[in-house]
Structure formats: structure tokens, C-alpha cells
Length: 159
Image (cartoon, rainbow, N blue to C red):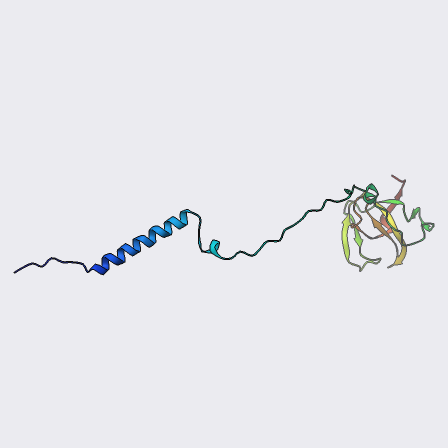
């Protein structure tokens, strides 16, 4: 018996050589930072020109002062409480006082004020549910405001 030596067809060597060349070409391109997305046409970018302001605005300290606008005549006083006067919460036995969105016991509670917390009167008086109600705000945060029953308010001297 004669043994035949196996020979690979020439096209296999050709396919292997082309594959090797393509692999080397891919590696070369990848190492040089070229890829498909970098070869796409880029969208032109806008050119921006920064124009300097004529003057630089400065801080206006008058904007830092809270000036509540009273909703009633400030000459109306009830038990020493009047618009634009300071009051403090007292008589809640440490539980605090519900500050409501409108005068009346059924109005929504905005927040609970702490015993001895100081407020500025900005509105009132109004009568509801057999109580006198005053609109209050805190001196440090005008968003913290609402209506409180006068039974738990004590007027204090201007701070």
C-alpha cells in the first residue's frame, strides 16, 4: 500500500493569508485611533462669541429684607396684637400650635409652630369658629406663614 501525503488546497492558504492581513490592518487602525464613528461626517459646530457685560450686577441688600404686606389696617389692635407687630406662641404646654392655611379649625394645617416661636403679624383679625385669627409669618422665612388662633398668641416688644 502506498501512503498518500495529504496536501491542502492552495485556496486554504490564500484565505488564511487574507484573514491575517485583514486582522493586522484592523489592529493597526485600532491602535491609531481610527474607527467607524470617526470616519463619519461630523455636524459642524456653532461658533460662540462671548460678549462681556457692560457692568457686573452687585448684590442689592434691600432684597434680603422681608417686608410683609399687611392685609388689614395696621391701626386695628386686639389684646395688644396688631399688624406688623411681633407675637410669640404661648400656652400650648409644649405641644405647639397648628398654623393653618385659612382662619378656622377645619382649614388645612400648614405646619406646627413651636412653643415660644416668634412671628410677625401680617393680617387679621378674622373671626371663625368662635376664635379670633391672625395671619402670621416668621421673620426668617416668608414661606412659613399661616393663620393662628389669638388664644395662643402673646404680643412682644419689637425685636
